[in-house]
Length: 156
Image 1 (cartoon, rainbow, N blue to C red):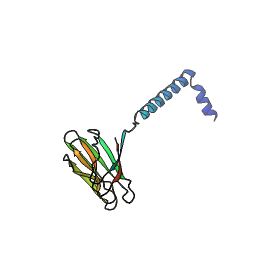
Image 2: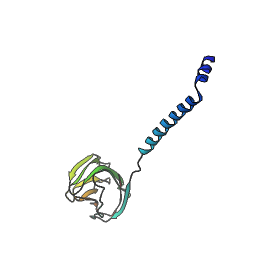
Image 3: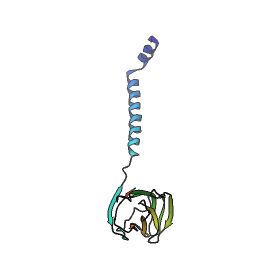
Image 4: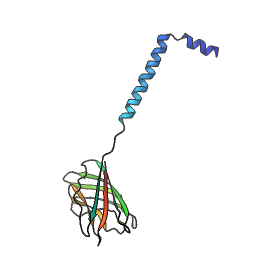
């Protein structure tokens, strides 16, 4: 123990201050870089009550970025969820891959720009789906024989 005390005493006061300063600078740099890596995601939420055979208003996902598109039907007896990762290619359509709603759950994927192209089912009976509305928009379509309450969330 006496040897350690002797070594510590051999350091000059300016040397100790210099080492403390170096440690403080390195710590500050690490903390500053760590806080710069966090980003708050953007989100958009849409809720609809769609009559039988009706389409929602057009939804325009952000272009040239991956977007998580989640939809669900909240009508009693037909509740379910479906989601896809979607890429909006401006004026060229969409690419996606994801999971259909349960019941007959399956992987869904595609690359279309034609209105009416199926993207993902969001109800248990696979009658309510998110579709391509145009080369730059998507919509929710209610193919059921009754009104359905649905919502869609986009996160990017």
